[in-house]
Length: 254
Image (cartoon, rainbow, N blue to C red; front, side, top):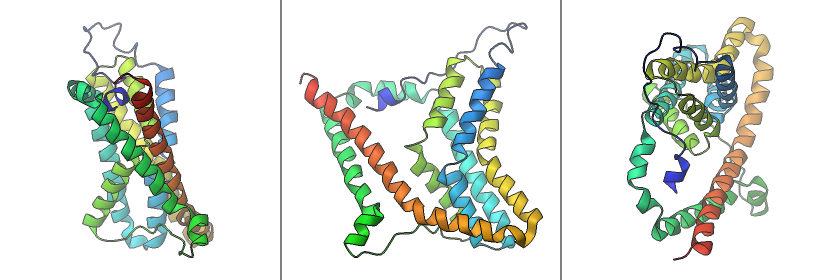
């Protein structure tokens, strides 16, 4: 279960120093691929949706709190990446037999089915048929502690669906980058992740109130569809977990 999820990630080995080879692994193709994945990550709800709603909910005096939220998300992603690059897979490997056992797959199956069933609670059409009010995501605007908590929560929730980020870690590990190389690349990756919302904040500051109507329409659209998107994410993750566990339980010998 967990071992297979991170099986592709190995701590990068330090290669013998050779002046002619220092930059051979840091190719333009690798950097472009990482930049593309970072831009995909930048469109997630944690890096674009939530900060956009926060930006339009609070007045301009709340900009430092928004920066604090973005810094929290960026640091969270950076630390997760460092953990993966330094060999989280090695720790998971030590529990490999336990994670591959029949009881573990039964727990995984129950978790997958539970997430899939839970996803229907977020279906707006289903809620409308049962006479329940429509759910809307509205992040709570508060002080520094609230912003840090919100950033950490967004990061933890998105860990399950951070496919582009895991792919980026895989690219760096398979490229054989040294620690001195992948650390700044990883830092640049998380910076690119928050660049779009920083650009929007800059455009808003330069345009004044002229841009507010469009941004407010975008905020309304995001808050209306964010709950439905969360339901789809839960359904997809639940289905994949349940399918993997069912395959093992039904087709593998006891």
